[in-house]
Amino acid sequence: MSTPLRGSQKARDTLEYLREKISSSAWAVGDLIPKEPELMELIGVGKSTVREAVRSLAAFGMLETVPGVGTFVRSRTPVSTLLTEFLADHDLEEVLVYRRSLENEAAQHAAVHRSEAQLEALRDAVRRDEQADRDEVITCEQSTTPGSFHLLVVEASGSKLLLDLYLGVISVLQRARAQGRVILGTTLETMHLDHGAVLRAIEARDVRSAAHSMALHVDRDLGLRTDMLDFSRHTERAASLIGAGYDPGVAIEQAFAEAAPESGTGAEDDADAAPTADEHDVEAAGTGELEIDAPRR
Figure (cartoon, rainbow, N blue to C red):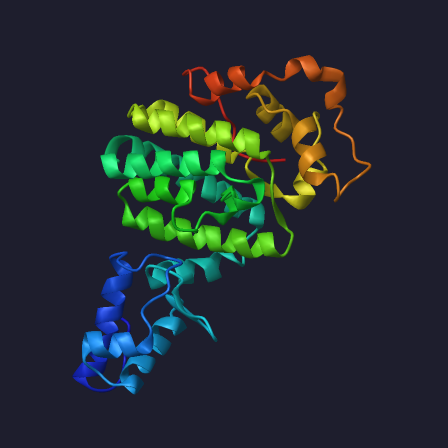
């Protein structure tokens, strides 16, 4: 996709320099780009030329300037930004289903295409989150944060198109999260187990287990607030997740007590139905017998 910029050849060269740094991930999403004086020296142009190029890329959603802080990389290409605006007009539950498809595809491709360096980065992400204080864990709704587990899986897929589509989808969900419409629907402990299962499948280059483990995880890691507050054992979605080893009583009590202090789940009557952490770990790793339905109510 071309990004027109009026002016001299120097202005066009400046724009191309910035775009190449971003699209190649030399400047990753979330990174601060060099300050104006550094860019002027690197490219050999004046301040006005640098500012014009930055404004052009900001208009396409690739850069974002925060006064007093600097300019951040917001998107690797204009594609994910345009997709974000397009998806914002669609039902959030449909966006969650689309995100599930992208994550499953990414996990399968990562099992095949991941490099040793990417595998080590995934291991580091899992170790970091397991050892971090609760308020320092990079949770699933923060998946555009550099070094986050989900973003690393998508990057390890080797598909730039998948990455662009994924960033667009997550941007929509992050906006909805900020508005309180999308919530983290699992405990940190379960999230760690799920991430570990996905990691082991990718380590083993087991495509089937990677798909099963990621499907189980994304079926429960994010959800709509109204959906989760109405969550009960009698819904089709609940039956699917409980059959996969999900204990809705624990998740709702810990995650949504403040939002719905009097809502019950009926989980107390069937406590024996929920598997232990070890049993969950075996199932999440993928046995070839687990069937996961698409999220629905």
